[in-house]
Length: 109
Length: 115
Image (tube, rainbow over all chains, first blue to last red; front, side, top):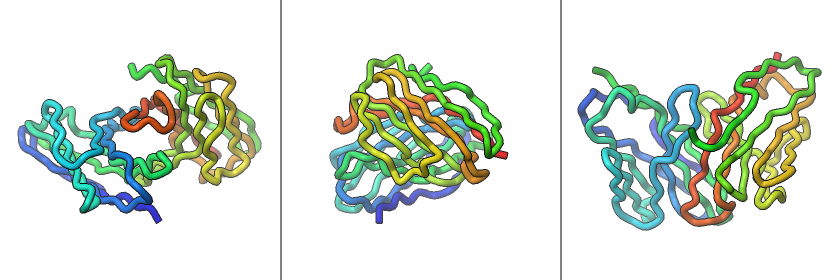
């Protein structure tokens, strides 16, 4: 079966750095997405990786290793507004998105 | 503002009721999706429409019936639901279904409670 694993919950301190990991086992691979979802709101797109390596976008970076079936989202200079759930999703060989259950990130002052 | 709107935002219905959820996208996209989001579970893809044609029905019970009259509008008709159908129902759109980096844009969702 297809599976996306990410930690259920993480806690970090304002101003610090946090890394949220995602491992996947899917039938084929056509890219990996990270989304942010604040409580009671719609998921919003953060990043897309299809080739190995690091994609940097401001305070957020996303890394992919296709051989290891592994990605991480790195958040720097954490702010209170970064408290949210972070969803990892992989597009499989049928171009369907397979979603992880999300990582709830709690930022403490 | 994501360009995808959903109504109603909240819905409470009995198991014998019939109701409909509406989604509209203002992004000129050709693919639209219905997802179910339950607490602490992955998003569950329910239906996909690409250029108004249904391309995916992910083994969804027949008490959920989608309708896509055009590329901008998507409906989810509900009837004789069960309490376990209570969840957040999210609509999303993308440029098309299979484009490589096409991210999906989500609406705010309808919080459905079935009594």
